[in-house]
Every structure is written in C-alpha cells, then in structure tokens.
Image 1 (cartoon, rainbow, N blue to C red):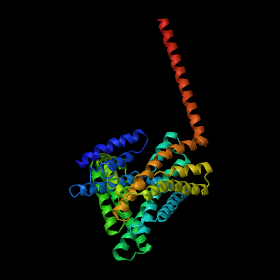
Image 2: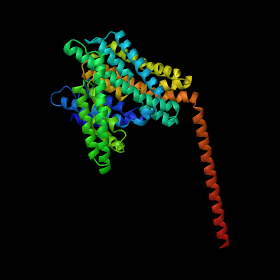
Image 3: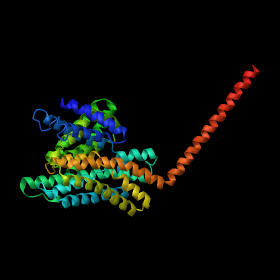
Length: 430
C-alpha cells in the first residue's frame, strides 16, 4: 500500500509539474512531502514493517541514477574539452562551496559537527543540474554554440568534482567519529587515486569483454544485466574497501561503459527501471524524510537566504571565470546563469549527508526551494539575456537557413506550377 500511494501520487504530480514547465522530480518530491509527516502522515519511513524496504529501494535508486548519468557522458567530448570548461567548473565548485559553508556557519546551526555540516551544505550548492539549461538552449537554438558547449562540458566536470568533494567530507567525518582522529587529506587522496586507477584498469578489461559480448549478442538483455551487476559491485567496493561514497563507484561504472555501442541501449533499460520504479521512490523519500517538527523561523530564513546565495554564487563564480577566459561580458553572464540550476545531484548530496548522520533531515526544506527556484528562473533569465544579446553568428546562420528554406520552397512551388501547366497543356491537346 505505501508503494501504491507513492507511485500514484508521485507520477500524477510529476506530470502536473511537467505541464507547468517544471522538472518531474519537483512533483515527486512534493508527493513525498504530502504523504509523509509534513502533511497527511500516511507513510512513516521509520516504520519497522515497511520503512526499511522503502529506504533500500531509494538507496538502489540513487546508485542507478548515478550509473545512468555516467552512461550518458560523452567521454570523447569530456577528454577533448579545453582548460576553459575545467576552469569554469572549478570556479563553479569553489565559490558556491565557500559561500554555502560560510552561510551555514553564519546561521550557527550545530548538530554536533558544525564544520562538516557546513561543508556538506557547501557541496550541495556546488552541484549543477544542466538538463533544464540544455532544454532551454535547445529551444532557443543556442545549444551547439560556444556558450552552450562550455556550459554542457563544465556541468559534467562540476558534478565529478562535487562527488569527489563529498567523498572527502564524508570520509573525514566518519574517521573522526570512529577513532577520534582524522586520516590526513593525503591518505584520503591516495585512496581516491588507487580506486580510480583500479577502476580504469578493471574497466578497460571489462570494456574489451563487453565489446566482444555486444558483437556476439547485440541488443540483448544480457549486456544491461552484466553492466548493472558491475555497477553494484563497484559501488560496494568503493564504499567498503576504499571509504569512498558508493555513488562515486556507480558513476565510474557508467563512464566505463559510456563508449560502448550498446551504451544507449543499456541506458534505455536502466532509465525504464528508474522511471517506473526506483526513481519515484527515491525522490518521494526526500519528502518522506522531511518533518515539519524541526521547522522554525531560522530554518525558513535560512532556506530563503541559501536559495539566493546558491544562484548568485554560480553566476559570480562561473561568470567571472568565463570572463577571465576571454568570453564577452554578455556570454560570461549567460554561462553563469546557465550553470545555476540544481536538481538530482543536489538531492543525492543532501541524502548522503543525512544518511551519514552529518546533516539533519530539515536540510531538505532548504534544498527543495532551491531546486524549484533555480529550475523556474534559469530558462526565463536565459531567454531574456538572448533577446537582449543574441548570438550574431547563430542569428546569421538562422537567417541563411530560413532564406535557403524559402528558396527551396519557391523552387518547389515553381516546379510544381510548371508541372501543372504541362498537365493542363497535355489535357487540352488530348
């Protein structure tokens, strides 16, 4: 019954959100808020009868979500991008990380580990969800421009850096709690390097094996099943043997398979599972974990402040770095605005912070408004910016294409008219 309620309401509200040009994830989160203790209290995620099942399904959903994100990565474009996208991504992590940490410390929240709490909040602000920006640029016709390619490439690197930062924060926090002493940054960095080195080595061998398999059995369910098995194995190994977040292993597994011919086929099968089952449960669980009991005026003010700071930090950090990399003022502003959307990765980081018992569940009340506000404002602001400062190259290309289309239409119409005249003449002759 809890699953039935989650699926029905999450999908209904998800479709409603899409109708008003919002991501479906917003509707699914709202469904969790309505079903959980915030509103109707129909589902108690701490209930011993079914709570563990819902939490386990949600955990699998996180891993599959990051695996799908890795599969959707274009590795060739990722390797070919210049230093500009990397520098923009780096600024897009450093500035929001510092701003989020500073705001949290300024508000003085303290659940026992204030510094780590502040770092996780900063990491939430560092995440970027570029899907809404991509859709907006595609509709405007500016996706494959210099600005569009920079935003697309920087967002991928941004999420990778954010996940690695989260891994460092959680590892440092857990080490400090268990032993009272912290592993040095060097040891943690060494673990991360060893993990990625082994992942690359094993991944290369698996990549060759999967290429052989897809030649023998193209587009069969065998390939997605084995790929999913490796994803779970790498997630387990990352967390249990290297002290790295399991989502890092899942993302790495996706990148290993992203250059296969069957990558889109694997991603399609994974996305079906996510859309039908695991995704709604995970995003609804974000709302189910929230509780109004922890709400107070300071949390509400914090949510408003952190939303404004999060969006401004991306504009300032990415925009200034783009300007330093010799973008024009208008294009730098477009890059900054395009990078300010938050989505699934921000939720995943918040969920990991709560699962690691670093953050309180009330942090969701700050993350959800941030996702809604950035998702609504980014397409609107981009449209305004491009109406004020259109890309002249693209405008000329569009004008030329429209002229060519008009010429083609005129020629077709002329040919058709001549053919009709010939038919009329032949008819009269007969």
